[in-house]
Amino acid sequence: MEAILLALICLTLVPNAFVAGLHDVPNAIAIPVRTRALTPRAATRLAAGFNTLGVLLALPLGIYLYMWFDFPQMEPRLLLAVVLSAALTLLGWNLFTYLRGMPTSTTHALLAGFLGGTLAAAVVADIAFVEVLAMPWAGAALTLLLSPLVAFGLAYLLVFLAARLARGEDPDAVNATSRMAQSVSVGVTSLGTGLQQGQRFSFVLLTALVAAEVQDAQAWLPYAYIGFAVLIGAGCLTGGWRIGHTLGHRLVEIDPLRGMVATTTTSALLFIGSLAFALPLSTSLTAASSVIGAGSNQRFATVHWRQFRRICGYWVLTPLAAGAVTAVFTLALSPLLG
Image 1 (cartoon, rainbow, N blue to C red):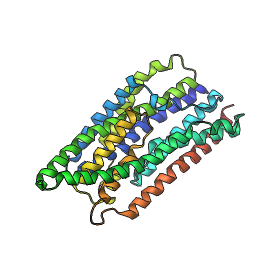
Image 2 (spheres, rainbow, N blue to C red):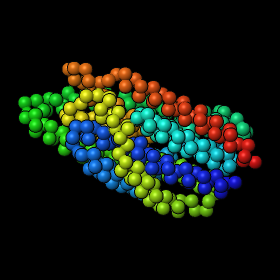
Image 3 (cartoon, helix red, strand yellow):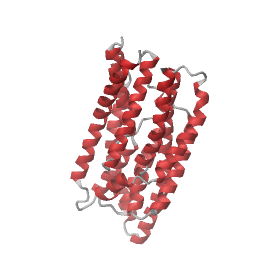
Image 4 (cartoon, helix red, strand yellow):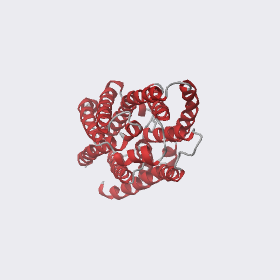
């Protein structure tokens, strides 16, 4: 049974990696394409290359981003069922939100799925709820909740600095410089996204390999990273234009200068947060908040607040839906584990 569950998890991670690339690439390219800093083809190729590089660089860095995370003691089959349920839920939710054009958090959904699945496992097994609640959920939840606020505030404030520096300069020169900076930020943001994605998927796979008692589980990781890098890069090449249209056209009216502020804020927070502080930041939440923060700091109304409220609704719904669906899947699989 453990071998079957492990095989199913591996099969589920294949489309998950592709969809993750498709789902997250708009965070890096939507604004540069909108402000014509890059053509769509150049932006997708640049993002795909740096996402792939980020995943591969995550191998020597290891999975320290998730080293704080540990499941309660449970039967290996039950843990594998939780991981499989979370992976299936993540795939379904990312596909659903992509079709709806909503930039939601893959990290948020995955961690909420683990929580829901672990709570369900506590119901069917002899696991105290105190052990589940003692897991370090608060830190991750707080980070995911605060990062959009930090991104919004920082982007809003940096517009003042950018506008002051651009005052009196030739508008064409300012726009050209802003577009150049956006082009650089595509690579930086994509590299940070790849680092997050590589660590996220390797953590899921390593958890499953250890639970299935695979000998020398870490020896499989280099091959897994190469596979994840190829799949995520292929997903990035699709452009993810449904979400890209939401971020670039339906959320704010933005000029190249504020587009530069939004993209550099996203890349700085993501890259520094991933490497310096090992924080489980959401690229989608950070990027959308930076766009809103930079776009709202103008003398005239530019933010489509109805669309913003719709996005916020999906942000709130993501952990609730992911946790609940994963719990249902775990309960449904539990009778088959005997």
